[in-house]
Length: 215
Image (cartoon, rainbow, N blue to C red; front, side, top):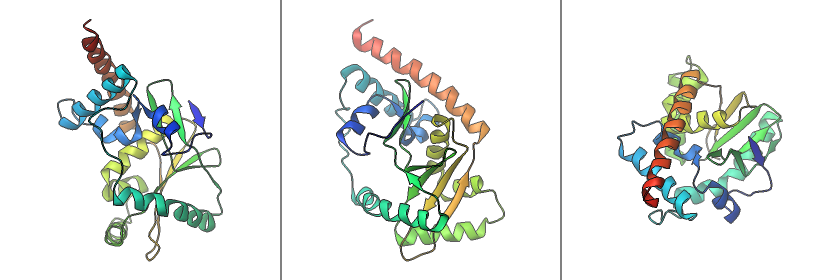
């Protein structure tokens, strides 16, 4: 495992180091059944990138209003968290494991935590707050699942990569509403599923690459 603090997220260097890797943003696809379209698309995309050394030609996504909103509000949300928690959040561009895996936490706290910051629109944050109140007797892990299963898988993948971290903080921020702060810990069952599916996906990707080479 290696922390790349010299790389800035969303830079050319960041795009380059993520190329051909299974990353946290692909965790939901990784954990699908291998006959599902999302899983198949993921392994084909990674195989193409590893074979060509270039971004997948069918991947034309360059961002939308939601990603732009996140880029705008994330630094504000990070400062808000620091002021309320008295924790310093250190930026890291990427965390890599070998040449196959990686993730991009929104920050690192001390030696034991990571943080994932979300900046949803008003209606989504309000919905999240309602769910937190409704399920307040559940563990933080279970509450995060209720808020968004994709985020849950993404954050569990980040803990899978960051072996030295024991918590991943979910911090959902909207400037006009209450903040949501939850502490995710490792889900042992999902960690095992991630490990199994990573091995399976790598094997399938290598088979695809052999096919491209005519082997």
